[in-house]
Image 1: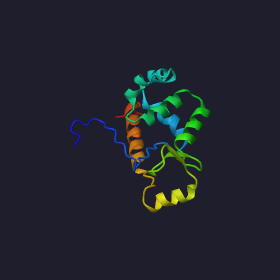
Image 2: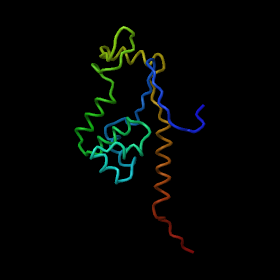
Image 3: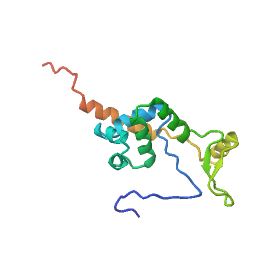
Image 4: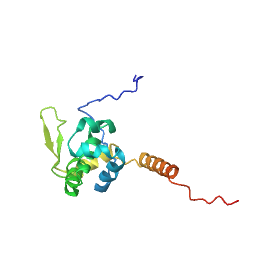
Length: 151
């Protein structure tokens, strides 16, 4: 269906894709350090989203990059806690037809239990392992050879 390979946004009121390549706050900074060439950091600090969008497919990753580019650990922590951590009192878009806007998560344990029970909350490690393996391979190819070719 998507022969040109262009990215298309699909919005649904009944489902959500959680893209969290960040398991810890430090992952935000680590990914930012390898997401864009160095000259993009200055654009991010200046708030130039048009320049930095060249590096990202998802707005969420671009947002994380802009926060990490500030170099402010407290801003990174706030971003992580407010945008990536499901917790008691978190605001989510309401899926109930008679309510509009956002609803607060009132019983996080029940919520997590339901997501697990229906198979909607899982952690997939394979993509991360593949990406880290590729990064190691690229670094190995770029680093000078340490072998001594004695004949």
